[in-house]
Image (cartoon, rainbow, N blue to C red; front, side, top):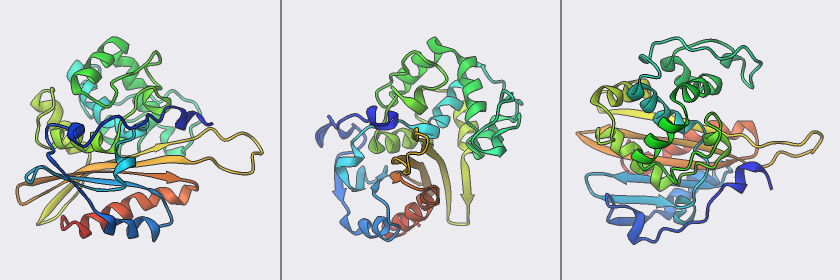
Length: 272
């Protein structure tokens, strides 16, 4: 069993314990067509904060915890700003000079740019600057998933033990959207700004991807399942619609399907 799925945790929450902010969960089997047409399996959660309602495809999976991968950059950024580990979103940070999975990561850059290209080594530097004690304290304070960062301060969101469910992800970003996280107004405003993806005359969308890579043995002949995330929210007519998607990734081309599926689901749910 590969490292990624060793840290998947079984669901322990019942319908009642889904969270204080959601009193109703509605199954949306019609959303399944957006997954099957893309040839992937996964889950989609939409939290309508005004209606106090969760709409979900694949409720069982929505309650299972997985590594957050690069979606943790949202909280990592908040903690870095709050602790002063990073001066601001424009401070240039070193990537370390080593070859990276993606060539675009082989560059010193600020958090504003690094979060757009999901630069792992830059955010590992951020985590090292924060340090394990402060990191652990703020992850617990934010109530993020199982809040367990383990012993390796620059890998815990990639390999575990940190894990979070899609429902927990949606609730977390909803709190950021409403500026209700235990961080300063400045820190929350900066992070909201650097993850804004789209703004039209009728809505604004904020989001962050995540991709948990699996260890593939040499000459294995096959690629084990990896995990893809897309979490965020839409602001429309003064309302907040927080979403979280995760899918199984068997080939690199599957990664691009995250945005496609989320947009189709949001259209089906009447958000876009």
